[in-house]
Length: 297
Ligand code: NAD
Image 1 (cartoon, rainbow, N blue to C red):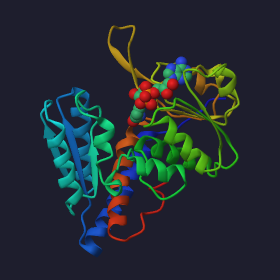
Image 2: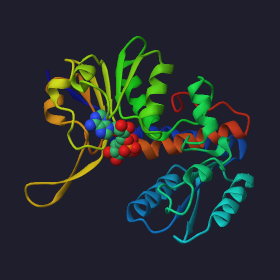
Image 3: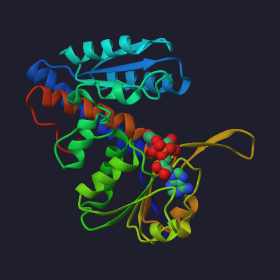
Image 4: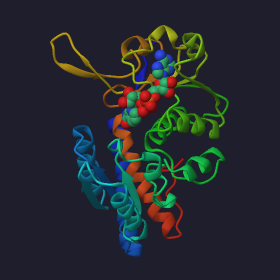
């Protein structure tokens, strides 16, 4: 079997187009423009690239983008005051604090200071609790993107065996919760899991979110399974240059799986698209409107 490649780039472009359409309608019908504020503390090069990309795509879908760049030595009180100001600003519907923060700042305290209704990353403890109890919440962007692709490819996920490899708060745990909410039988595997290959072989759906290059080979995959590769790992290629690979060995997995997301061009582009979808959702809810179907969990 040769797996179908799930084209995350095209999927993300489609999500952004849908968001743009809804934003245009909100402006025309209600005079409302969704706004996303991104806060970057320090000069981490990767974070700067992400923040630039987020700002650019926010404007492209017709939303307002507000960037707040603070020096690396910003103290907690200054950052908390900025978050309080953004919480109170009616033009701001979504707030994202780019992680990681410099070591002297307490990430949990900062995230939990964001108004949960504006927490477009879905990391606030209130949103984690709402998701865990199956209530309306803001859902972390990367798992939301994975769920959208899985639903699109498989339709109803009910009753499927899903194995999520990785138990981080930003990917593994919310992913498992979303799959459980869609009535999958969910196993969360992690660094202490015994006989991981056997656990993965039972899965109709595999989501790999580990951060170890090409860790999952094709002979762990059940024939016909759907494989979502969240990993982004930079490795040195034979020509001395670096290239990006996932947590799965794409070639050997694709020989067995029914469908697989490539790296790059799979889950990666979905994360910012879902951030925009979440900002639209937050804006709709703030104005007493239902979030558009298909763009939320
Ligand atoms: P993390 O380091 O926080 O968590 C990794 C998890 O993998 C841990 O729960 C750990 O228990 C598990 N693990 C480690 N070694 C293992 C092993 N040998 N067997 C089984 N499990 C093992 O990482 P994260 O933030 O969840 O990110 C995971 C990967 O996804 C990284 O490559 C990251 O770059 C990528 N990522 C991609 C996106 C995207 O937009 N596509 C977003 C977030 C993260």
